Amino acid sequence: MRETADGSWHIYSPGNRFPLKPNGQCEANGKSQECMWYGIEFDYSPASSRLVLQCTAAFNKRTDVFDPERESAPKADATSFEIPLEGSNGEMSMPAAVFRQPDDTPAPWTVEVTCGHDGKELLRYAFTALHEA
Image: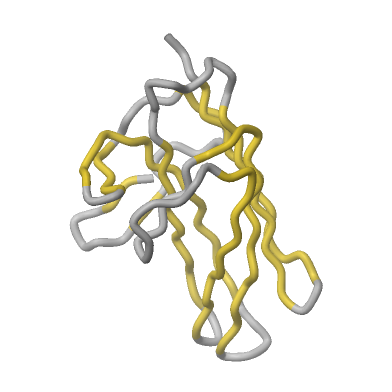
């Protein structure tokens, strides 16, 4: 994904498996560093004007999860988050980022995300970053 001049995010290269190559800057723990932005875009038409998706992200290897509300967090196998959907119809762009870390193993990094509401799964996606030399 890339952020456009108007501040919105859009996918510029569709897929779910990419070499881990920085395509922008990210800020984590008060520091700016190169990262690879990825994410999803989708249209929605919720049954009510306000809907919050409850999501879980599971990682194939322990991952630093950065939260702007906290200084730092321990590596995790999974994390949860919410996606608020407002209005009767809309479009959602949801960027995320992955960093190349010096202590990374060469194995691919994968995240699998599922989101639901009232016990029903409404969204599922996976993304893999390949640590190539």
